[in-house]
Length: 499
Image (tube, rainbow, N blue to C red; front, side, top):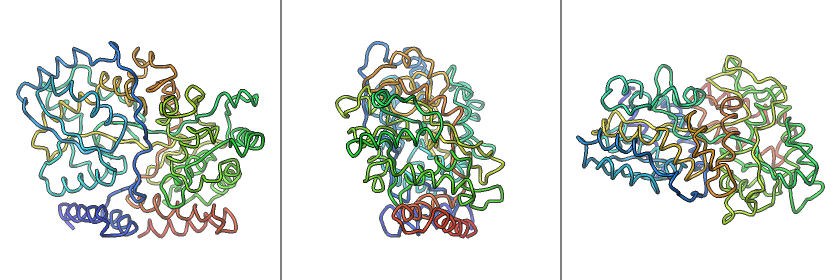
């Protein structure tokens, strides 16, 4: 099949799925055969970001005059241009769309249309635009699992910097993006598929008041984490549980939890020969640990995605979790939760065994207890306005804009190294909406603990169906042992990968 035919057919498959003309399982299987890793779509999920808790703006949190002056000067030939972007609801997209976009529009004379959509609809728009080559959208929001599919349909930002020096923003440097994110999110083979746009990642969050009452220090090992969660549940249950999870059967969130415990016990999803390895000795040890930890969680946990997990913390039902760091600013909002000022952020407990290296695993899997799920922003090669789109992309991902996104909107961690040390970010290191007091932990996690799922088209079907469906059956008691469950997953996973 020619590449153009494949893309047209894939666009039809995605469109049929969004319109519910085909089943989830057929969509996952077909998209994998066509080379699209559509992880996180099969469950109809959105990103684990809820709540938009903006900080109060002040004189420190205004866009840089120098940056806006550059925008005004470089945009003179493009005044009157309209640019379009379809994106998932993420902290950067929400902050730009609701608070920062008017500054760019006034300075540039351009109009920016941002469609904030469920992730499956973002993919629908993207695949249709690529297949038709109509250039309806000038910029693409690219989930990391779409990098391979989109790599030849977007501009490598390094090429744009070299080819368009007159449009280059001063001090806009690719080198400032955190190297782990560039490699783990934005790179496909020898190309950059845009630049890292945002980075949800697992950290540990816990009720420091309860830990102090129990005489605990933050756990540094997984066994300590379990022992402390059990002690809290034994002492305070059923009003308070020591831990919580995102363990809904058949949902991608359940697979996310599993990977953290698997990697944390020195295991991996695949070994170097491409075979499923979650059923080896380390994988079984991880499942047995998780089974014990499950007993310290609220009874409803097997019906929750990240939303239920987060609410169990926010409403004072559970005392700790290893989950997405972008929950933390929400927890600090006194108008939305019962735990403002009570939560503390730390790195996840250290793995029980040494992590396997990338060479020990398959398909680019990077073991690490800090499970990540980031995205990139790129200029479409089909755009009718690639130069003004490049100006907007630089502004949207530059140091100053990232500072404003982070300080005003809270949520996910910045993708640029320099933003973490900006005085405006440090000044927001206090309890309240839009807090940044968790970002030191996010930065350390990206550098030291980040885990990335395998990069293969079949991963969509595995992570949204094959694995979480069977994990759900295990916690429902449908298997006689963890070994039996994992052997069943291994058999099914190897069959999917082998075609």
